[in-house]
Amino acid sequence: MLLALVTAALTTSGGAASQAVAAPGIHPISGRQIAPVMSHAAADWLDRPGRGAEERPERALDAIGIKAGQVVADVGAGSGYYTVRLARRVAPGGRVYATDIQPEMIALLRERLAREKVSGVDPVLATDVDPRLPEGSLDLVLMVDVYHELSHPQAMLRKLKRSLKPGGRLVLIEFRKEDPDVPIRFEHKMSVAEARLELEAEGYRLDRVSDVLPWQHILIFGVGS
Image (cartoon, rainbow, N blue to C red; front, side):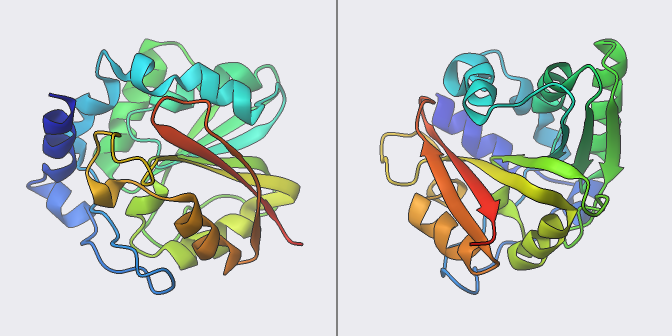
């Protein structure tokens, strides 16, 4: 059942969404099939009732080590499932930049922030080559099941690197391609080897892999040697 839901969510598009969603391609370094972006028309899947049990978001943020006062970015934030959790963790004194390339997702995000009375978040309408984040200002960039959908991953990695402070981290949460029992379409999974190959080509280093989640890797990258 879950696989059917995932398939439907990741292949639904139409109208304005078809213009916002990038066509898939082949990664120039790893040869990985780049997955299509999930349309805002399937945004309900991001807030499905079973997501907490399947992905354990609070456990993920514990493993990453989000702290009060940090400035972080939720890149590909969608409707804000992780954004609101990040905002509560970095308060008081922290900030969350929540980006998405679809205006409709930004609208859903703003509605969520108002509904849940969450402050300290700056929604950002990004492009597929530029997250539009302030340079040298972020302690951490988080992408949850997003990196594998980037249509121009190397260009985005360069921009993200410029947004990080010295000692900043880039964290990917991705469904494990190495595990055939994870019920997600193959192109929407990533292996540790693929992520490492692609990010190291842009000057990142893999500091740590955590597999505390049921189906996903947490891949924590630093910058430089």
